[in-house]
Image (cartoon, rainbow, N blue to C red; front, side, top):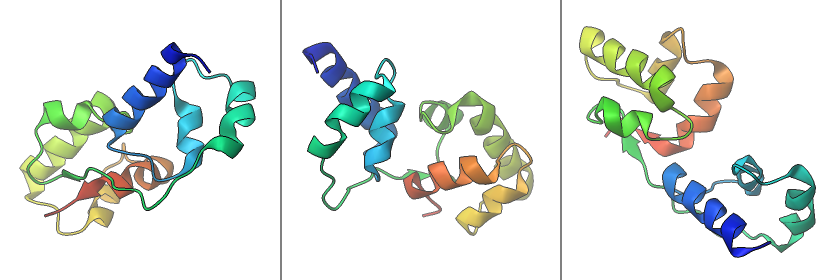
Amino acid sequence: IGSKLASRIVNFREKLGGFYAISQVAETFGLADSTFQKIRSWLKLDQPQLRKININTATLEELKAHPYIRFTLARPIVAYRSEHGPFNRLEDLKKIAAVTEDAFQKMFPYLTTQ
């Protein structure tokens, strides 16, 4: 891959707060699946260090900047928190209609309540 695509992968990793699975690299904008399949065997993931977002203190701006949350989930999360108080467990996010099981599974590793 060239420097442009490598830069996109690094930028995506930074926006996410780190990769927890090799398959996430495939979500990089502009990375064709055929290219991902070619480079997959060269990718390694050793003890991922993920940057966590505290869903009880994060602002709307901070939440919507995350690729797996964006505005469509950030707004309902902040609204729910305003109405019901702080989240006790991450699983409480599932009480929000906009948070599907798939969305929850993707963003779960990046979130904390503390």
